[in-house]
Each structure stands twice: as structure tokens, then as C-alpha cells.
Length: 363
Image (cartoon, rainbow, N blue to C red; front, side, top):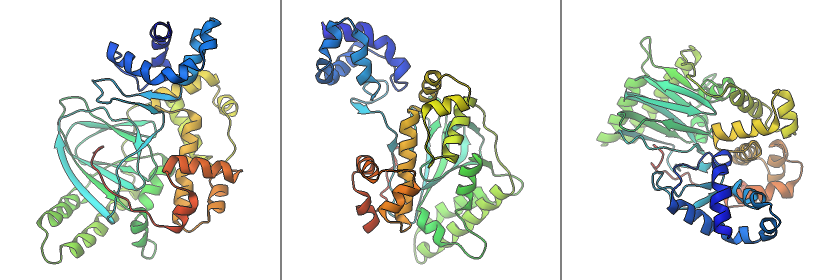
């Protein structure tokens, strides 16, 4: 009986609640039902009382189903952004070309990232803003910024991706030149894509760095460090010169909301206050936000605050100081949320420098 209720009443509503659910099939219905059954049976009274939808929706709004064969997954996961890619070196460069066109969910990194399109066709979405890239365009993705590539199946997509450890980049500061300024500007101005034009040397410098790393040999590591520094100086010159690429799309309300949340991240914010400020029904606002970002407003705020706290700890703040500066009024709430998000306590991060390992899953 419960399975019938699940299939009849729940599935038509899944798309509204979970934008990550795609291509429902009999197999996916079975898998999702089985994984949900234990919690569903706890609400059996709701079903017996005729409130068939209430119990199941209460659980479904916390889930993101990725079990569809077309999407390549096989599990039901908590609905949260995924941290992808880890980095051990000061920087690491990848040169990739393919036409897979795989769908990649919004995700973030604990490091900075630059993507430059060398050839082909691709789009990119950062914090709700969607861009169409031309060869030579580069994307600045600062630590903690949610982003994803947008590439149609069969479209050729050649790019270089540079992972950068924020602390290393900051250590290169000399005089009034802080090479991490480009990422700070991108996040503060919400301008994430810039064009390599007017004689800019960004693309050749990417290629020279890749060639040095590929060839290796005596002095390669030292030369690569020098080329990396030169590249970052040139990237900052392009950003300072204002050679930005305008966004090609995105929900204007959601983009405005995302920008407001990032500017007021540490302030007390409620759904009602946000809905009133943006002149929109709170239910409509939450639905549109989830459709565009794959996340709830509250979840987005929580994750951004925790990422900020993690950065503060890396800069030498105590856990208590990081909690306050990240907008938490209660330390125990902060500590529980931090451990749930990162798998370790704030004090562990304050006492120990964790490696940033690297994978290429989302490149």
C-alpha cells in the first residue's frame, strides 16, 4: 500500500522539490522507495489519516536522488553541495579535451580555480550567473564559489584548468601586487569571466607553463613557479583592465538574492525578511532558488558560513572567533554543523593544516 502511495502521490511532486531528479523510471522508483521505506513507515499514521503526501514530502525535501541510469548515479544522498577536487601542491595544471557533455552538479572547492577555453564550445555557471565562453575566455572561480560547466553532448571542449592553493597565492604578494586580488574582485563584483584580448598574454602563458611541466628536467619546478607568478600577474592585469564577459543568462531574482546573501553572509537573515526585501512570495522564492542552484536558501547560507569559518581558521583565528565572524551566535551549533560538513571539528582544523588532494572528477 505504501509503495503505491509513494508512486502515485510522491513522484509527481519530486520535480518541484528536487531539481536534481531526472528521467524517473521503474528502477529509480524502486530504489528510491526502498531507501526511503524506513523513514516513511515512521509516518504511517499520516497515510492512515489520509494525509498521504505530508509524510513523504517531509522526507523527500531532504534528499537528492542521483540513481537515474542516464545520470550515472546509484544512491540517494543528502541534498547539499559537494566539495570536489583536492590539492596537495601549491598549484596544479590540467589540459583536457573531450566531447562528453556530462551533466555536472553545482559544486565548490577549498581552493581557487581558473578555467581557460582553448577551443570548442562551452558554457559556465558561477553563483547563478551563466556565461557562454569563446576560445581565450577564462573563468575565475574563487574558493567556496559554487559553479559547474555547461557543455552539450557532442560539443568539443578543450580547456586548461589551474588549481591554486589560496595560501600559496597570497604568499606571492609583493608591494602593492596581491595576485589573489583577481579572485577577490570576481567575488565582490560578481564578474567571473574575462576575455584574453588586446594582446593579452594569458593564453600563451598557460601554454608555456603546461609545456614546462610536461618537459620536466633540470630547474623545471623553479621555472614553473616563475611562469605561474607571471601568469597570475597577467590575469590580474586583464581583470583590472575590465575585459569582462557579460553573463548570458540566469534567473535575475535568484542572482540578486545570491549576491545579497554573499554581501550579508554573517548577518541574521530569515526567509520572511528575504522574501519581503525582494518582493516575492517566500514559497516561490525558495522554489526558484532551488531550481537554479539545486539548494535551499538556508542550506546555501549554512554552507557559505562554514566555508568562511574554515578560511578564518586557516588564517589563525580560534574556533570561537571563527564562529562569531562567520555569523554564528551559538558555538555548539557552529561546532556540530562544522563537523557534519567537513568531517572534523573546528579545533582540529585550527591545530592542523590539512592537505588539499587533487582529483579530476569535475574537470
